[in-house]
Image (cartoon, rainbow over all chains, first blue to last red; front, side, top):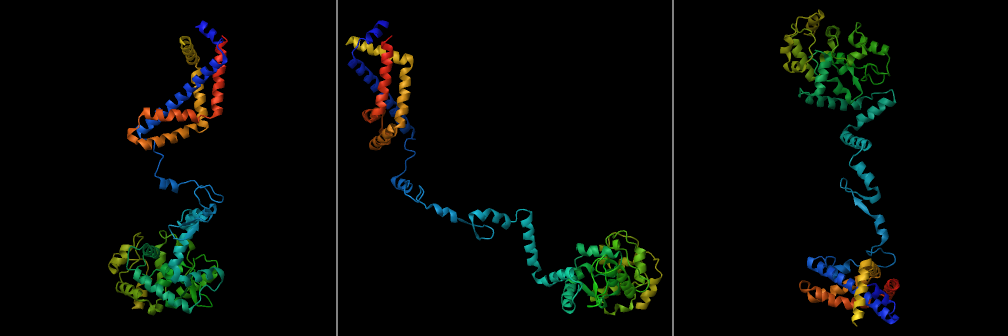
Length: 346
Length: 96
């Protein structure tokens, strides 16, 4: 071998060049053979023409090389004015504003849900707009009730209330009964009745209503409108003295200002004291009581002899539906004034 | 003549043994892909295949179609560089 190699150097340049060329041709043919094998394999395996489509669609996706357009032939600025249609409200919104809009429109997040709730509430209160106005007036000025035109709304809500009273399971009702603490002849609900009107004309109230009202609300009578304040017992607009004088005027001289927390603490409210307060009510003013009141007061009149203050009993809902029969179960009572009061009524 | 063929065989042996042949082949393939030779040949293959029909293409057809074209399409620069490398190899082993 070594001998052969040595003889290479003895070859002339042309022969060496021919040898190099042969090697080169060999290499090129090798590469071509490799490519042929590769293409043949691709053809037989079926993936050679995969990137091919028919000429028409090739023409569709031809790369466009013109100034001012992208490779798809579209004008670049077209994307800037893209708009999306909100699936919720069907408005079309600029794409850049779409995400914030969706957040608001679909009511995600705390704030926007509040906005949505407010919108729902305002749409519900469309017909009650005047009462809303009243609330605002309430906050802003001292003239917290403005008279005659409110009476319509008041009686309307009263009628509504009486209809809704037929449902004994209504939580509002059960609350009001509990609150009255056994005083079953009063079936009206002061919370509901006065929720939409800030002032009450006390002449229209029955004595029981009056009493309930005065144990739960401020009740001071306005000089302007002759109506009663319906705020809490701690209402800052009126003083304790004003409240006391109103109670003296309406309930008699012995009436005292009830404890403000008596309105919230229902269970601890003293039954006996409530009855005593009841007994001091002047009953002559009861001629103009409302129909539902007259029915209930009739029931109480029939049972006047047996009517007694009952001991603390937490569930009053069944009692109210049972009517007078349940009242007979009450133990003989401690209030000596009661019989006389009812005889006076009879 | 006999001596010439013998010498050729010896040189090829040397190319394979030293791994120079493999290196040259890699270099050539890279250069040819780089200059688009491969894509040109593939396009030519496509024509051939469409002409003969996908099912009836044989390796022999492809080789006989591709090799002359491939040989002709190699750019001069690539050819020159490769010949340079081969000559250098020959000179290196002739001097031994």
